[in-house]
Amino acid sequence: MYGSDIDVVELTPELLKVAREELNEVPENRAKAMEELRGMMREEEKKGELKFHRYDDSYILRFLRNKKFEVGRAFQTVLKWATFRKEHPELYNHERYSMEGVADIYRKGFMLAMEDEDMNGRSVMLMDLKKVDFHTMDFIDFIRTSMYLLEIMLEDPRLQVKGAVYIEDIGGVSFKNLMFMFKTMNKHKKMMKTISKDALPMRIAGIYVMNQPFYLSVMLKFGKAFLKKKMKERIHVYGKHWDKLHDRLMPKESLPPSFGGTKMVDPEAFIEYAKGVEAKLLAKGIEI
Image (cartoon, rainbow, N blue to C red; front, top):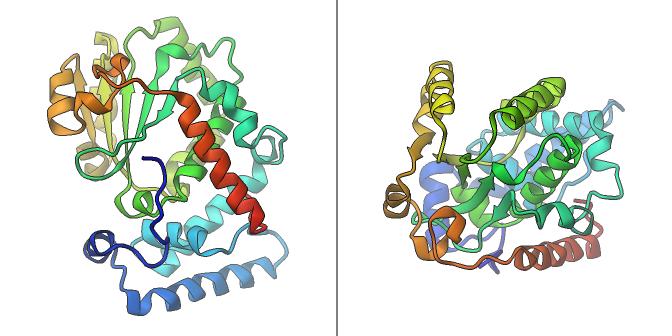
């Protein structure tokens, strides 16, 4: 199910075990690391160039967990993220930066946050690019929706600790639409570079590519040659072999028919969940 009642600080024994072994999170030193990071952020704010919009536990911990409790590295990511928000008011200082504001785009189904976790307890995001016409969809709306969904998902301590996987179906995407997407991304290359270069405080545990046409298989193979070893190992290209995906990552009972599964997925479920998260944060005076 979406979200959890797990305390973002005091994790369950199962999550704490993962956090200890993989993220160097030690309960005895957690509070010290959190205050150290907050202190660095406050000192940075005194310079007058950046303002951090959040200091709450969930926000601080997502950066610490992402950088395995290395406070200095976590601070650098916080800086990048705050700078990104400052440099792109068209994303954040906008009336549509809310679940209500992005709901219509989310309903198109090109991106779906799954209710079920994968076999390793990680959050799952589906991407169906054939449902996006980059000739008609405003690219800024596309990015705003993506960023908002990630912010909501990062409120869940399970995602902070275990990370998320992406399943991308790129079958049925026309060459023309794909080239226009790349052209648009290049137009916004500074934005895309910041997003992809260590600014997102989220562990991407895997990217699973399905239904890729031949020319994209060649492009992916060529592109992987330039990636770091760790990232290469996280990209899995399965083509039309849905059975591999179901056996190794997520059973078909947890996936919609468009991803080889049998589960009916209603976008409204995540929309309602997100609105609930939003309301709880706003009640505490926390800006998303």
